[in-house]
Length: 87
Image 1 (cartoon, rainbow, N blue to C red):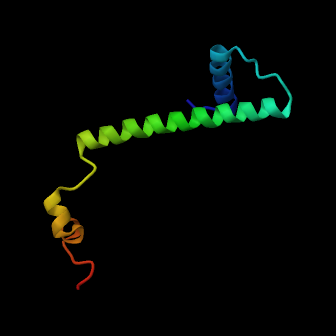
Image 2: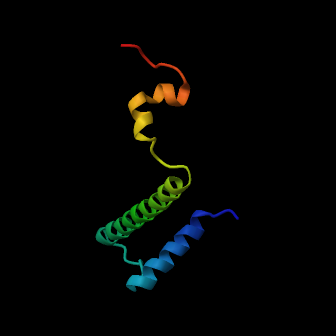
């Protein structure tokens, strides 16, 4: 199932028009700005929600952080079994 730009444009048009009642047929610069602003806000919200969901799933399955003991000992030794540098 390959999505083309027409599919995305159609879905976006239907969502925006369904919610706001705005047709998007206005041709002024202000209308173009508002259209692009809606797209930017929608994309930002979409990405933020998906990133939050993905990070929560990773955190619940394998975790996002190492333990305090591993962090204190040093991640070079814990993860790679070697020293990154000597002081």
